[in-house]
Image 1: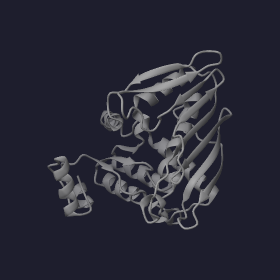
Image 2: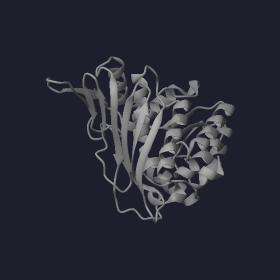
Image 3: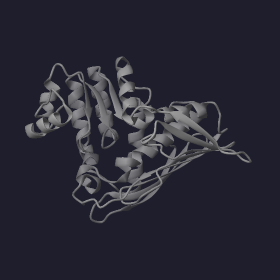
Image 4: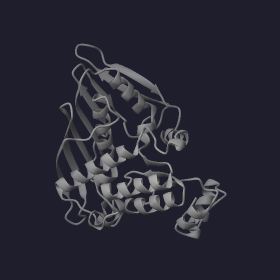
Length: 310
């Protein structure tokens, strides 16, 4: 593992029993025995270290959002392509058995024709304005930090409904509250229109608690995910609820004995040779970044990276 300081590296290594600890990220990337890296610093450093890792011929699993904007994600993808390394944006929920079962149900026509999606991810807390979540210089705000989840889910569901892996919105309209002191979106909402006349209503925030659920509405029924983003946290299964007119709700229990992140690790390991993961491909990440750019632009939130380029 790598840290910004020697003290931090040694303390973390001692706590978790790690035998190889580097006092800098550069030293970690220079280690010939390191084959893959997990990148999880604040958002503005995702592009720098993902590109550096790719150039060092290391496979990359980078936390969401992969970049601050579409331009950064494009540069990261290009670096992975040029250096022939694996790259995946770490949307762990995409690798979970619950999400895979939702995809299977939609492909099987369990809801008929999908017509609408509602997805939310937001929370509230006593965060300092200088901290990551409310600091514009650190890529703060709901859209980039957790709004990326509802966007990715809506694009996934719309894509499956249209017979594809994911789909891009034809139209996006949004409103949000941008803090006068923070200059970040403290809470925001968006309406997206996808091919097939599918509508999605999305909500996010870092200063507003949402129900953090996903609902999918079809011509023959509706589907509910109570815990879409961190399923099966306290038990070894998750539940998908399907409701149809004049019928008792159907509760589908999905076995999930592993940790939510273990499925992501398994997906990476299984697909290293392909250089991309089916759960979150490069094109999928590029599309998600573009949608997030549009959402931020619609409510007037900008970051330094937007003008600086990648």
